[in-house]
Image: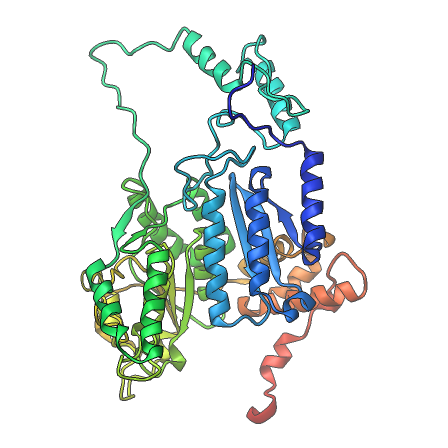
Length: 526
């Protein structure tokens, strides 16, 4: 007898047919990576339709980056439109966040509704019917059930919860597992007098009070009677704040495998071992608490082109955190960080406000690139806002200059600054950061970085599987002589030349002579 409201898992053949139908309806998906969980197909189809509302003819001619995969039972989305404006990028990020949250409310196996799914959790949630199963497809469920029986994890009298045809059978796997646990002889209460740790309740996602709702209402009311543009702008800002969580924000949590993440970071950035140690300390400390991703402001000091900014980008990507780089060398005032004064007709909020107010996570990663190149002799000091933002106590009540009606909590931003030297950086700012000296990688480390970078290019590109898994040793020997900043450009150029020759591997002759280009100035600098 089947359970009420039970849903059938999908066979691989049915899954492939659904994917083929989706790509036929949206032909630009034909050469994209589209591999969601079966239960998330409907959410993905709706998301693709919404994406097309943001796309222009140029996006269809030059295919956008689109990747939809299943990661630990969660829908993972990466989309980048061609030449997108800031507003289109923001709208796209909102759509991605909404789709991820919608997917977490459906079982990845059968699409049945689930309660409590959180897109920022480390693992997706399955429905009660499939929470004790392994696999996503009907064939996998049946095969893994047989393996479990053969290994003695399930009694031989039980039947798989689903057959290959997808017909639910009784008893279900989770009923059988429950019966098996109850029958085990060693599952007895501990003897009296023995100290046993109490079972831990599931940890709730940490949240913060982001702003005062009364202040937001006051902001909207104050601008309601103003000229159309300012009134509309205030209403637009308020609507985006409410859509992202209103007066509360979540703090992204460490993944379950955060120790492996640290090991991967040390492998990919061997010359940043000291940074890995600092992060390891912070992560271990917060793992004992509510599991939030947080570290104190860090300043990486070292030569240009040794991977400082790329390391920050890597961390944000692996931790699924919002990420922004601010070029401090070209900053003329503090407005990119703290917004422009509200009396200007073109007043706009700063990066900090936009990152925190318009998306649900309160602990993004912000990189202050080339902090030592900031021109502090200008009328408006570009570093002025940092004295407040880098101090957690004062950052809790940060006020953007374009919106003075209410303060926001910016104390959970994860800051990473980069510089070639500490000369020119004011002492009060240095005292607010952990200063780490970063050395240029040696030849062997550059070789390792080149292999890792090549592997990421293959994994992230639709043409990646065409090329050999590893670089030839002769190619690596040539790449050793390049700075890390030039490795990516050299590899992309070499891959293009190999493709023109219809080869599946890079040869030394494919590598461009980047060293000569850096020595010989061109154009107006010659």
